[in-house]
Amino acid sequence: MFTKESFTGLARQYMDMIFRIAFSCLKSREDADDVTQNTLLALYRTDKTFQSGEHLKAWLIRVTLNECKKILRSPWRRRGGIPLEQYDASLGFEDEQAWELYAAIMALDVKYRAVIVLYYYEGYSLAETAKLLGIPTATAGTRLARAREKLKNLLTEAE
Image 1: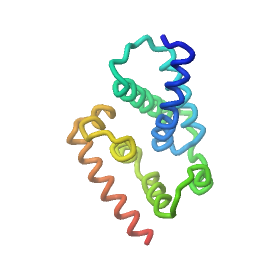
Image 2: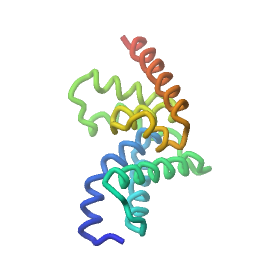
Image 3: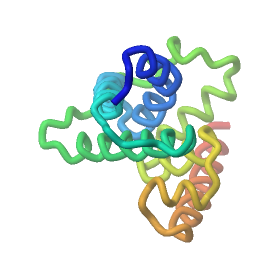
């Protein structure tokens, strides 16, 4: 179990990462908030001993992805969410290119978005990404290659 102070520090450290991953999977701020809350609650309740900060981070990502899967499978799943353009102001992109890339990533299927976010934004290797997603490394590589190709097509169409 965590003390109040240690849990608060960990929550602050990992909250943004958890939200980013959840939002990239669910495309809904409300659902991403729910996943963030559930993931941090799972952390607070766990009696698991973590070997390192990386072990804790990997555990949090795995719990986040599992929470996202629960929501995606839910019969009560709300369709849609808010349009990305309305969410743009709170993201704080510095230039138009960054926004276009983000919009293109969000247009991908969830299996491609998850690989892109973990590999490029969270900095995991292909093997680590595969392990976090519970898929073979070759599958993660294929998804990453397909995601890149789809992004290339989406971005060249936008020009």
